[in-house]
Length: 316
Image (cartoon, rainbow, N blue to C red; front, side, top):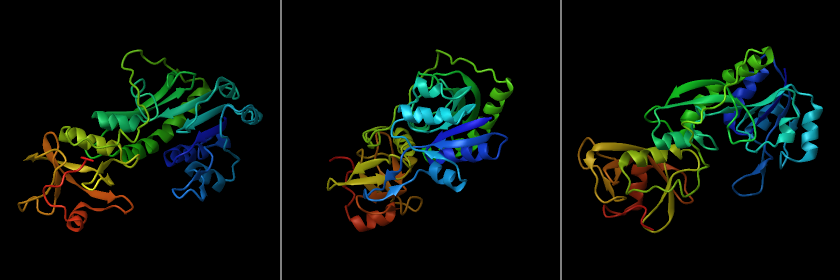
């Protein structure tokens, strides 16, 4: 089939590469416009755009995918179908009708569970033990279209959202290829999604990433892992400044003190650990990045900060 590929972040690149290696023909790539770096000066192309340019493909970067001129550009390619992985814009009916068969999305959940923008992050934060990916035909509802294929993936105890997304991105690439081939041959049987078990994975906000130390240790652990690497879990230091945090280790044998209170391991088994109290057990920090500084090992930060065991995180 002649295909349009739409995607933006690195997680979409494995599927793009798999389609290029398949019997299908990718005739154009759609991605988000170049983004400015943190300092706001240089423009940076998306990972998908960089990959597409390396292969000499036409790349379209509309500000809005609903623009009539963009819809006309897509229609001019006379593509049979389009493959979508984390593109980042809502596709309007006029655009959906601009290809012959359908726009097929690879979504990183077992639909109808975790429809929306942050399925992997929300799954980890909710404590799900099983995650997965689904290919479905895009329609006007939010991730509501009929499902072509699925795969499952176990959520490992220490998984961050970045870890799980990477695995699902790799595993989902052949699923997309297979789904498109089945559509082409007429062997696909897209199944309507069940009305039961629907849940929504709203985009994570800065507030979602603020660590609430008064919650139980396992909840704090899930929250931080779900927000790693983005948007990045954070807390406030005793002086009111902000610091980002890496994943923590729950210490079930260490009774918690005051939620947010920092202490160091006092015996041989815990020596060198930087512990923080929660609503249940203590957790051990891995790394911390105070505002304006690069991430550092928690023990190095603690030695330099010289805050004392009465210091409490998250009070300001």
